[in-house]
Amino acid sequence: MASGIIKIWCCFEIKLLDDYCMKNITLSVLIGILILNACNPTPKVTNYPINADLKAAFYYQIGTYWIYRDSISGMIDSFYVTTSGEANQIPSNGSNYSVDNITIQILEKNISPVPTSSTLYCWDYFYQANIIFIDFFFDNNSHPTEYRPFINYPFQATITTEFYAMTYSYLAYKNINNIYNNYVVNGNSFTNVAEINHWVVAPIMSYNDVFFISPEAGIIKMRLNHPLDSLYRVWELQRWHIVK
Image: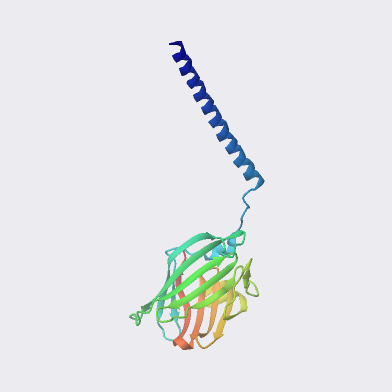
Protein backbone atom coordinates (compact mmCIF):
# COMPACT_ATOMS: atom_id res chain seq x y z
CA MET A 1 0.00 0.00 0.00
CA ALA A 2 2.80 2.36 0.95
CA SER A 3 4.66 1.60 -2.26
CA GLY A 4 1.49 2.45 -4.24
CA ILE A 5 1.17 5.80 -2.50
CA ILE A 6 4.84 6.55 -3.16
CA LYS A 7 4.36 5.62 -6.84
CA ILE A 8 1.36 7.92 -7.18
CA TRP A 9 3.19 10.74 -5.44
CA CYS A 10 6.19 10.32 -7.73
CA CYS A 11 3.96 10.47 -10.80
CA PHE A 12 2.33 13.63 -9.47
CA GLU A 13 5.75 15.21 -8.92
CA ILE A 14 6.81 14.26 -12.45
CA LYS A 15 3.60 15.78 -13.88
CA LEU A 16 4.20 18.99 -11.96
CA LEU A 17 7.77 19.02 -13.16
CA ASP A 18 6.63 18.50 -16.78
CA ASP A 19 4.14 21.35 -16.52
CA TYR A 20 6.78 23.57 -14.98
CA CYS A 21 9.29 22.74 -17.71
CA MET A 22 6.72 23.32 -20.48
CA LYS A 23 5.77 26.68 -19.03
CA ASN A 24 9.41 27.69 -18.85
CA ILE A 25 10.07 26.49 -22.39
CA THR A 26 7.03 28.40 -23.68
CA LEU A 27 8.14 31.50 -21.79
CA SER A 28 11.66 31.16 -23.16
CA VAL A 29 10.33 30.88 -26.71
CA LEU A 30 8.18 33.99 -26.27
CA ILE A 31 11.11 35.93 -24.84
CA GLY A 32 13.26 34.78 -27.76
CA ILE A 33 10.67 35.98 -30.29
CA LEU A 34 10.45 39.36 -28.56
CA ILE A 35 14.25 39.70 -28.59
CA LEU A 36 14.42 38.80 -32.28
CA ASN A 37 11.69 41.32 -33.12
CA ALA A 38 13.51 43.97 -31.11
CA CYS A 39 16.75 43.24 -32.96
CA ASN A 40 15.03 43.05 -36.35
CA PRO A 41 12.10 45.49 -36.22
CA THR A 42 9.69 45.56 -39.16
CA PRO A 43 10.77 48.49 -41.33
CA LYS A 44 8.34 51.37 -41.22
CA VAL A 45 6.61 52.12 -44.51
CA THR A 46 6.34 55.82 -45.34
CA ASN A 47 2.86 56.73 -46.56
CA TYR A 48 2.21 59.60 -48.95
CA PRO A 49 -1.31 61.00 -48.58
CA ILE A 50 -3.32 62.87 -51.17
CA ASN A 51 -2.82 66.62 -51.03
CA ALA A 52 -5.45 68.02 -48.67
CA ASP A 53 -6.39 70.88 -51.02
CA LEU A 54 -6.82 68.51 -53.97
CA LYS A 55 -8.98 66.18 -51.90
CA ALA A 56 -11.13 69.03 -50.62
CA ALA A 57 -11.69 70.45 -54.10
CA PHE A 58 -12.06 67.38 -56.34
CA TYR A 59 -13.14 64.37 -54.27
CA TYR A 60 -16.58 64.00 -55.87
CA GLN A 61 -19.12 61.60 -54.37
CA ILE A 62 -22.09 59.78 -55.87
CA GLY A 63 -24.84 62.33 -56.44
CA THR A 64 -22.48 64.73 -58.23
CA TYR A 65 -23.41 65.67 -61.79
CA TRP A 66 -22.62 68.20 -64.51
CA ILE A 67 -24.81 69.21 -67.48
CA TYR A 68 -22.90 70.40 -70.55
CA ARG A 69 -24.04 71.81 -73.87
CA ASP A 70 -22.03 71.30 -77.05
CA SER A 71 -21.79 74.69 -78.75
CA ILE A 72 -21.13 72.95 -82.11
CA SER A 73 -24.16 70.64 -82.30
CA GLY A 74 -26.41 72.02 -79.57
CA MET A 75 -26.72 68.59 -77.94
CA ILE A 76 -26.76 68.31 -74.16
CA ASP A 77 -25.10 65.56 -72.15
CA SER A 78 -25.21 64.61 -68.49
CA PHE A 79 -21.99 63.63 -66.71
CA TYR A 80 -22.55 61.92 -63.35
CA VAL A 81 -20.46 60.11 -60.72
CA THR A 82 -21.12 56.36 -60.52
CA THR A 83 -18.33 55.24 -58.16
CA SER A 84 -15.99 57.05 -55.80
CA GLY A 85 -13.54 55.69 -53.27
CA GLU A 86 -10.14 55.68 -51.58
CA ALA A 87 -7.45 53.01 -51.34
CA ASN A 88 -3.83 52.59 -50.26
CA GLN A 89 -1.24 51.10 -52.60
CA ILE A 90 2.32 49.82 -52.21
CA PRO A 91 3.99 50.20 -55.63
CA SER A 92 4.96 46.94 -57.32
CA ASN A 93 8.52 48.16 -57.86
CA GLY A 94 9.43 47.08 -54.30
CA SER A 95 9.61 50.58 -52.88
CA ASN A 96 9.35 50.94 -49.12
CA TYR A 97 6.50 53.42 -49.25
CA SER A 98 2.75 53.41 -49.79
CA VAL A 99 0.52 55.85 -51.62
CA ASP A 100 -3.06 56.93 -51.01
CA ASN A 101 -5.28 56.87 -54.11
CA ILE A 102 -8.72 58.23 -55.00
CA THR A 103 -10.60 56.77 -57.97
CA ILE A 104 -13.78 58.30 -59.41
CA GLN A 105 -15.78 57.07 -62.39
CA ILE A 106 -17.98 59.47 -64.33
CA LEU A 107 -20.39 58.32 -67.05
CA GLU A 108 -21.63 60.57 -69.84
CA LYS A 109 -25.03 60.18 -71.53
CA ASN A 110 -26.79 62.22 -74.18
CA ILE A 111 -30.06 63.64 -72.80
CA SER A 112 -31.16 66.28 -75.34
CA PRO A 113 -32.36 66.38 -77.97
CA VAL A 114 -33.79 62.85 -77.99
CA PRO A 115 -30.74 60.61 -77.42
CA THR A 116 -29.04 60.17 -80.79
CA SER A 117 -26.56 57.47 -79.85
CA SER A 118 -26.23 54.44 -77.58
CA THR A 119 -22.52 55.15 -77.21
CA LEU A 120 -21.59 55.35 -73.54
CA TYR A 121 -18.70 57.65 -72.73
CA CYS A 122 -16.70 57.15 -69.55
CA TRP A 123 -14.31 59.40 -67.67
CA ASP A 124 -12.09 57.89 -64.98
CA TYR A 125 -10.44 60.27 -62.51
CA PHE A 126 -7.47 59.08 -60.46
CA TYR A 127 -5.61 61.10 -57.79
CA GLN A 128 -2.21 60.62 -56.15
CA ALA A 129 -0.38 63.16 -53.99
CA ASN A 130 -1.11 66.47 -55.78
CA ILE A 131 -1.65 64.94 -59.24
CA ILE A 132 -4.90 64.43 -61.17
CA PHE A 133 -5.01 61.75 -63.88
CA ILE A 134 -7.94 61.34 -66.30
CA ASP A 135 -8.77 58.53 -68.77
CA PHE A 136 -11.48 59.04 -71.40
CA PHE A 137 -12.96 56.22 -73.47
CA PHE A 138 -16.16 55.06 -75.15
CA ASP A 139 -17.45 51.77 -76.51
CA ASN A 140 -16.33 52.14 -80.13
CA ASN A 141 -12.88 53.43 -79.27
CA SER A 142 -10.29 50.74 -78.62
CA HIS A 143 -7.63 53.31 -77.67
CA PRO A 144 -8.55 55.21 -74.52
CA THR A 145 -7.35 58.78 -74.28
CA GLU A 146 -5.06 58.97 -71.26
CA TYR A 147 -4.39 62.42 -69.88
CA ARG A 148 -1.63 61.24 -67.57
CA PRO A 149 -0.90 63.31 -65.71
CA PHE A 150 -3.75 65.71 -66.37
CA ILE A 151 -2.75 68.55 -64.04
CA ASN A 152 -1.47 69.25 -60.53
CA TYR A 153 -3.47 70.91 -57.79
CA PRO A 154 -2.88 73.46 -56.40
CA PHE A 155 -2.32 74.61 -59.99
CA GLN A 156 1.23 75.33 -61.06
CA ALA A 157 2.91 76.57 -64.24
CA THR A 158 4.10 73.12 -65.37
CA ILE A 159 2.70 69.61 -64.98
CA THR A 160 4.61 67.18 -62.79
CA THR A 161 5.49 63.97 -64.63
CA GLU A 162 7.28 62.19 -61.79
CA PHE A 163 5.89 61.03 -58.48
CA TYR A 164 8.44 59.65 -55.99
CA ALA A 165 9.92 56.50 -57.58
CA MET A 166 7.33 56.35 -60.37
CA THR A 167 7.61 58.15 -63.69
CA TYR A 168 4.57 58.71 -65.87
CA SER A 169 5.67 58.83 -69.48
CA TYR A 170 2.95 58.89 -72.11
CA LEU A 171 2.77 59.60 -75.79
CA ALA A 172 0.75 62.80 -75.38
CA TYR A 173 2.14 66.30 -75.01
CA LYS A 174 0.76 68.60 -72.35
CA ASN A 175 0.94 72.27 -71.54
CA ILE A 176 -0.59 74.77 -69.11
CA ASN A 177 -1.77 77.54 -71.43
CA ASN A 178 -2.89 79.90 -68.69
CA ILE A 179 -4.17 80.21 -65.14
CA TYR A 180 -6.99 82.75 -64.88
CA ASN A 181 -8.04 84.62 -61.77
CA ASN A 182 -11.51 84.75 -63.30
CA TYR A 183 -13.14 82.96 -66.25
CA VAL A 184 -16.75 83.17 -67.46
CA VAL A 185 -18.68 80.25 -69.02
CA ASN A 186 -22.38 80.53 -69.91
CA GLY A 187 -22.76 83.61 -67.74
CA ASN A 188 -21.19 81.92 -64.69
CA SER A 189 -17.98 83.36 -63.30
CA PHE A 190 -15.34 80.98 -61.91
CA THR A 191 -12.15 81.85 -60.06
CA ASN A 192 -8.74 80.17 -60.21
CA VAL A 193 -9.23 78.47 -63.59
CA ALA A 194 -6.45 76.55 -65.32
CA GLU A 195 -6.40 76.06 -69.10
CA ILE A 196 -4.66 72.81 -70.12
CA ASN A 197 -3.84 71.56 -73.61
CA HIS A 198 -3.24 67.82 -74.23
CA TRP A 199 -2.40 66.67 -77.75
CA VAL A 200 -0.85 63.86 -79.77
CA VAL A 201 -0.58 62.99 -83.46
CA ALA A 202 0.08 59.31 -84.22
CA PRO A 203 -1.25 56.60 -86.57
CA ILE A 204 -3.32 54.94 -83.84
CA MET A 205 -4.28 58.05 -81.88
CA SER A 206 -4.71 61.69 -82.77
CA TYR A 207 -6.32 64.42 -80.70
CA ASN A 208 -5.90 68.01 -79.58
CA ASP A 209 -7.97 68.74 -76.47
CA VAL A 210 -8.23 71.82 -74.28
CA PHE A 211 -9.75 71.86 -70.79
CA PHE A 212 -10.70 74.63 -68.38
CA ILE A 213 -10.86 73.45 -64.79
CA SER A 214 -11.76 75.19 -61.54
CA PRO A 215 -11.90 73.91 -57.93
CA GLU A 216 -15.40 75.42 -57.72
CA ALA A 217 -17.05 73.08 -60.25
CA GLY A 218 -14.37 70.90 -61.85
CA ILE A 219 -14.11 71.00 -65.66
CA ILE A 220 -16.17 74.00 -66.76
CA LYS A 221 -15.32 73.82 -70.46
CA MET A 222 -13.63 71.38 -72.82
CA ARG A 223 -12.77 71.34 -76.50
CA LEU A 224 -12.44 67.78 -77.81
CA ASN A 225 -10.91 67.27 -81.23
CA HIS A 226 -10.39 63.58 -82.15
CA PRO A 227 -10.16 63.27 -85.97
CA LEU A 228 -9.70 59.47 -86.02
CA ASP A 229 -12.90 59.02 -84.02
CA SER A 230 -14.82 61.84 -85.76
CA LEU A 231 -15.36 63.36 -82.33
CA TYR A 232 -15.67 67.13 -82.17
CA ARG A 233 -17.20 68.82 -79.13
CA VAL A 234 -17.03 72.11 -77.29
CA TRP A 235 -18.68 71.27 -73.98
CA GLU A 236 -19.70 74.28 -71.87
CA LEU A 237 -21.04 73.82 -68.37
CA GLN A 238 -24.73 74.73 -67.98
CA ARG A 239 -25.50 73.62 -64.44
CA TRP A 240 -24.01 71.29 -61.84
CA HIS A 241 -24.44 69.75 -58.42
CA ILE A 242 -21.36 68.84 -56.40
CA VAL A 243 -21.38 66.34 -53.52
CA LYS A 244 -18.18 65.96 -51.49
